Image (cartoon, rainbow, N blue to C red; front, side):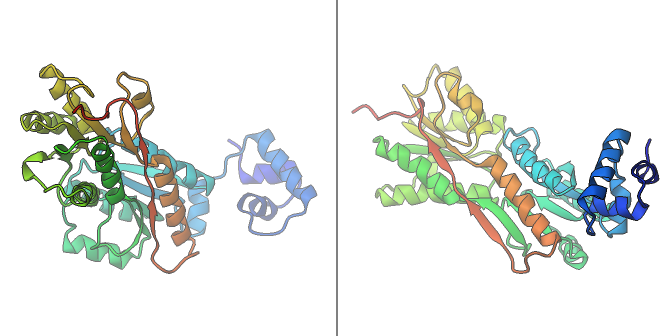
Length: 334
């Protein structure tokens, strides 16, 4: 394997010049730069990122912690983080908390011990321990809250407007004439859950419709919970249902199928989040589409800005959703 010394010898320049070209730390004439770059290509030289990082007191790595990598939402978010990190010469270390605060703590401590340069965190449900909060504060490690807010951790955040997302989904069903609208909500206490539920209730209040607790079902963002919540809601004779994530929508559709019901003939559905198959499978699914890739990309951008000390004030970025109206929502028959 070629070394930096081999590159210097092939290009007939000093090791310092090779280092300046690789790290872009000093001016090198175009002629010398080309010789070094040609030598790097010819020798298939790969810089030692760890050594470069240690020289700068950095590891050139970011910790990324998500609640459930099996949830279709998160891979595209992580891809956004990874692409932005790669542009800046960073790699990512991915952890999966399984929506458990105890497992989240293990990963956060692991990231701290491995000295990642920053963390993109999708908060698991539940509070962080006081000891962990003190540890994170003492470390001064840059952290960006991704997708889910957590007020106890005063740091940068990149979120999506969940209140508006819940509002636009419910408002769409209301405009179609539905008045008995159920919701399958997520894990209580999580900012995404609370925001979407608030949006649902806001739309109903605007239409002078009383909030009916019997029409509010709770899941855990998993398929099975959508199925169980769906079985309960179907007994309430809803004409429209807002399901607050795609996994629970799958479960709800399973419950409908077992009862011989179809959408939109029997129940109109608006799901949360969009995927390519939503516009392919029949019936095509109406949904609130989140900017998943952009969410991850922007989070990495803010995190890297903080690492590079380009901003000092706390940043809070909120991205917007879009409503994709397709086949599973239709006007209520009079």
